Length: 416
Image 1 (cartoon, rainbow, N blue to C red):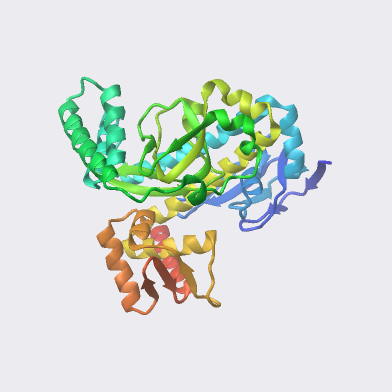
Image 2: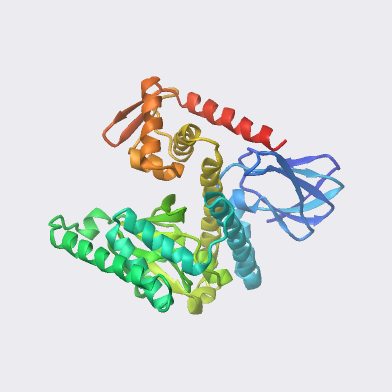
């Protein structure tokens, strides 16, 4: 049963870094929320109104608290467990949609910050953006992805001044793609290679009618494209990419059980990233017509989506921190720190092993392959890492954390 808790002025409800799955609803009084600004590293103070949730993101996403919450006046809160929250959602359809939109807005805000940072503050319109995405894939010789975006552009902007260039790139990409497809004898058995399904409500037979399969490199949704569907990954992986200054930057690799495309279906805005099949992929595709019925007709699905939103907000903030670091050296170090936070693979007290290639590090750090290769060479020459095939061994992960902390301190001083 949810319980009521009172706090005296000055009492700390929870600290930044606490691990706690409780959710608070402010009944009366005033609280302050102190958190570090993701761009400047300086402390920001916010407030919460009576009736609003406190700690919902970290509780549902299962990650440490990212803020410190303190009672400014005498405060009364209702405290709920995730299970009690699920029961609340089951009885309150408007609340479900409200919270999904709140998290959608948070994701949208983070993506705008990332876009502004990567493009040096320049605002890009839909036509220019789609063209730059197609051209970036063309320059990367990602023929299937380029072809898909060229088709989207030609359909959306048939009279564009870039129409001739799009047709040229599309024809070239089509020729290369068909040649590669013809010479590809390595057929992958989907069920054996990607047979790890998600054992949850989305695996029910009733959802099979929403299933779609995509081949490696196929663009599922393109950045700047208008969206009317969102996707749940059943098998395989999906790569999230943003195009900045004519280059593709990796934002995330999504795995079975995760969702993408959800922001557009909630706020009717253009896609904020390109989502590409990373290997063969099977997704469930849901459109606007069945979205609200889907999430409000089944409280378990609604809570699953809320958890996924919370995780996405947390993960995208973490990726953004890497992009904000001032140099390639610290960005590469923070990639290693991020992977240690996500899935530590300890070989000793501080030694770590990660299945990463130089290309992987470049994508996660948002830098060129050449820059990543140079920085990894510096770490290797200094005896801090060892590179073997598609594995990188970190001799002391604490060294990497110190490098990031030092560079982060520089950013803080610049904003003081």
